Length: 316
Image (tube, rainbow, N blue to C red; front, top):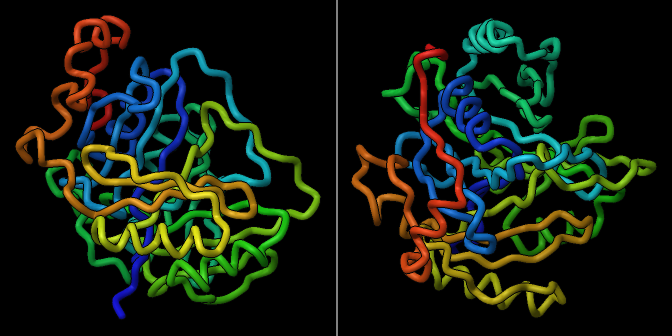
């Protein structure tokens, strides 16, 4: 039977200043702004989608930027580090680039045989770049980052939890994940064990609970092919006692949500239909796109939202 879950779909974070958010992810990291819309549950707040050329599942980091939001605190019950995948020979390029823009970077670390660096964005969001030769995705070849060094998409994510057993049961028994290995207090899982599907659980038995605000992850979404496979996942999760939401239409995918046993908000999102349903591929992210139900309120929404733009001149 075909797997219902095939890896990470997107990761969504809470951010602060919207313009600084765009500057960092498009300017410094060189991701493409593939969609500029609103938080469907808070229409006076932007929802930005940053990714590869087309915003393919497994490559999209999204943000809810709340101007003036205080910083959150990393802790247990949270996804604390989002890892992006880069080519094996690109690590020094990114060390030099991040330092060029005054961003503190960790020493090179090794994890499960791959080298990586760790840093934070302007809000304190935990980020990693993991160099590997297993990822054949192309990133955004038309961006201002040299194509051979561009970010390819997600490598994986770290869940910081006090215990792993119940979350492990969820991943392995119900979400098509398998155990890959252990290094110290870190346990690794994957659907196929390749960049884009990796989930690490880091055990922090005595850690304080995280506080969600700017610079913290709101939720992680996992990929499922279509509405049919999503409904099957919803059925399985409900049968095993997880409090799953109804299906919610996010225009570019359908979603269901639930909390895993450690407290992290999980989403199951469909690969279909994608971000090109309301913009041409070459114009993705240029205009503010609203769901049909919000179009009548466009004048009020546009008045509430601060003006933002993609400005890459200072980041080439």
